[in-house]
Image 1 (cartoon, rainbow, N blue to C red):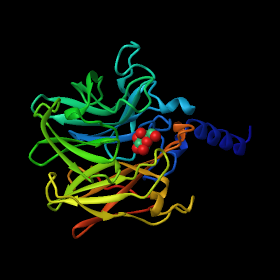
Image 2 (image 1 turned 180 degrees about the vertical axis):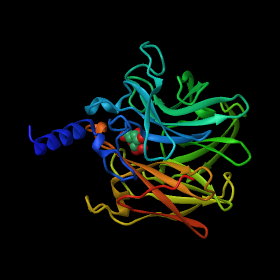
Image 3 (image 1 turned 60 degrees about the vertical axis):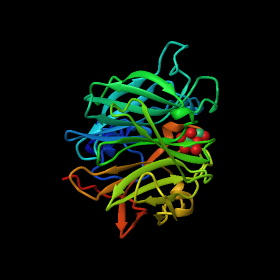
Length: 335
Ligand code: GAL
């Protein structure tokens, strides 16, 4: 074998494992490999910062249309720099017991994890649909763990304060109070429900916002005295135009500001009217860098979610609103 062949062989081997693609920056919409060379499998996700480490939790999708159901569970990855992610395995596994709420074949979407200082435990909420019922059940699932990587133990599922619950996020405010924010009332209206101080139940305080505006894919952050909520319209897996809301209090009143996204993705020609082909999932405050937030989106491929991609972009704050501009590649500052 001459040198050229050797080089080609090495390149092919690297491409096969994906190691060649080990990134030093975030490339929105491109395949994103973990540090062992596998494509990251954590869709509809959220990120927790815990003692110097970022933990990315998301839906583990299997190949083909079967990926529209949960057959594995919630996958978790860890990173110090938000670019290189180590595979930490399955944080919450579906159950082999067909009677379980999280039986293999149920639907688990949009998992989010927060740390509860009162109990010292990690609390996961997710959108749960019971096996064989399509999207009718509209429930929230709750699981807890002693460590961020899990294993998370499923606790129960419920309809928060009796209301339907589908797309969702969690938000912990500066005063330590936690909120479950979700699409309710057949996805027409968003509810913001306060959690008890163990983060495992509801206090009964519930606010309706974006009433009858059919907002989903909710993601929330706070900056400069404003609460911001980004969401999408309701067109299933198909992309639509994002919308931004703001309020001085989580209790409202909430004001709708329009589309925060700008710019066009050159590879596809998709612009802000279709959120570059993506849908929001989370707003991540960068630890130790006050006011810096990263917006997380998914590009869905329901025919094969293993091909679904991630779009992570920096949020630009301007006076009392925010913008998210398309970037082909960028590097987050973490320290
Ligand atoms: C989307 C939602 C996804 C998933 C999908 C199913 O609107 O954001 O999380 O539920 O519908 O069609």
